[in-house]
Image 1 (cartoon, rainbow, N blue to C red):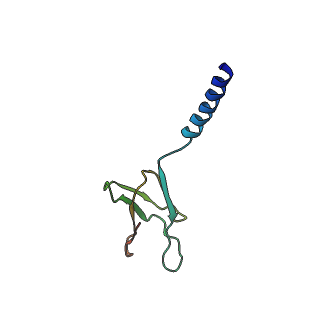
Image 2 (spheres, rainbow, N blue to C red):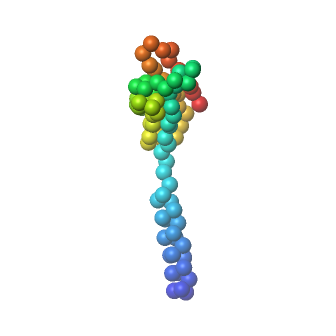
Length: 92
């Protein structure tokens, strides 16, 4: 009986460790370029959660790369803005 309890306890402890490693957050990342493929640094990228209307904003770096971490899962609209260029928007 005690041996069986120890085995069940060991299995449960392993499952707790696996559950702890899971996360409920998401990240959106990408690269901003124009229609010719040229990199666009310092563009403003916004991710709007369509369900909560919460907006997170960042800027692309010198290589045109951006990351918006720690987003709750959901449906987002991504908008990219850069002075002198037409805004780009993508949903879904």
